[in-house]
Length: 287
Image 1 (tube, rainbow, N blue to C red):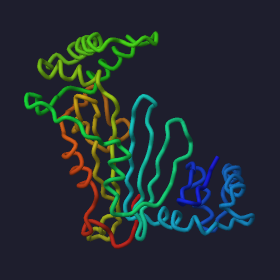
Image 2 (spheres, rainbow, N blue to C red; image 1 turned 180 degrees about the horizontal axis):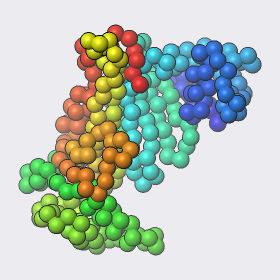
Image 3 (cartoon, rainbow, N blue to C red; image 1 turned 90 degrees about the horizontal axis):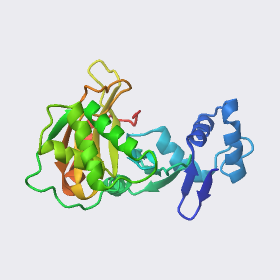
């Protein structure tokens, strides 16, 4: 169910509620499948009996309808993927936070100057020890080898009993070695440890409308960053496969490249994802 916190102008809305608001803001009637969602918004008092939109929704609707840039964030952990994001409009920035297993996301306006802080919060960027100097600068294998290691660990925990870390590392190492004969120590053992220590992964994609081409055709530009959070073993940037990954774009032979990164390095890379003013179109038209 949707909800509204007037003290902080926070909304808890599902995608279907956002779709209803989009139809109403365009002076259109929502389709039949969205009528129950319309009823929920009317019961909450955000929509009137004739489809009138409450004034409290004005900033949210205007920003979502005319974005200058959109930040899409997917964080995957033990509960599966959870989606967050930010919508940068001409006059406001709207953040939305998901929650595992919940349909609704929380929408609220934030200060534009806190944009990078919000991205860092959503991916849970935190201080970790810098990787040891002896750590290889890059680990190279294939997605098929990673899948084999993950499958070996999943099979070992099929009965619900946890696998001791040292046993998990041995299982992952054996699976990686069998799937990719080119892997050797220290990369082989380190990758096995990373797979066992993997606390979560996250990827941030920033999309914006770029200035028109000479042919005056609309252009959508993007930059993205994908990261493994391996707890005490630090952060590792997934350089390959490169984002964005399209459906069918990855198979067992696809290269997997990982490089270590410090918290400060990731902060800089998150900042660099955002477009500079010359990269933006004159009007908001991000996808």
